[in-house]
Length: 121
Image 1 (tube, rainbow, N blue to C red):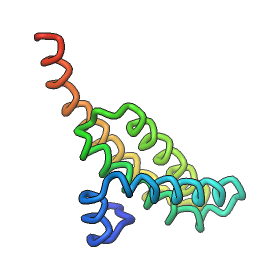
Image 2 (image 1 turned 90 degrees about the vertical axis):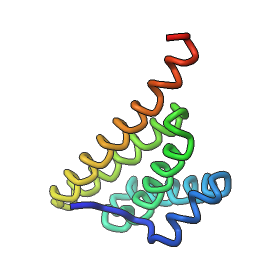
Image 3 (image 1 turned 60 degrees about the horizontal axis):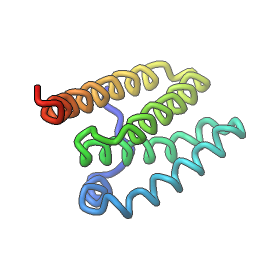
Image 4 (image 1 turned 180 degrees about the horizontal axis):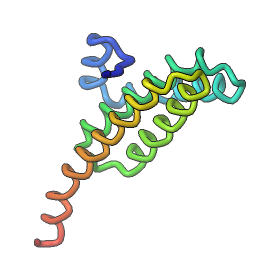
């Protein structure tokens, strides 16, 4: 199962407008977190999911070089997994866990060559 929250049009927009996308990331994260904290798990998923997708794209655009965005991806995935688990939607939780694992592996492999270049290895 693959989970994606942004449609293709918005997905492409984020790639083309990464600075502006940061504002949408913050807005969706705030709204989703607010709903999550209020126990409105079903309602928070769309917001947290969009924020998660934006963060993943921005991390890719930055070639895995932004430690803050890596932490953002991790924290958003944790909120999503918790919301899905609270709704007894384990299959969706597992899909997010698999996706975040792939994203973090990709970010790590993108960072490796650059780090080696910096240190002359």
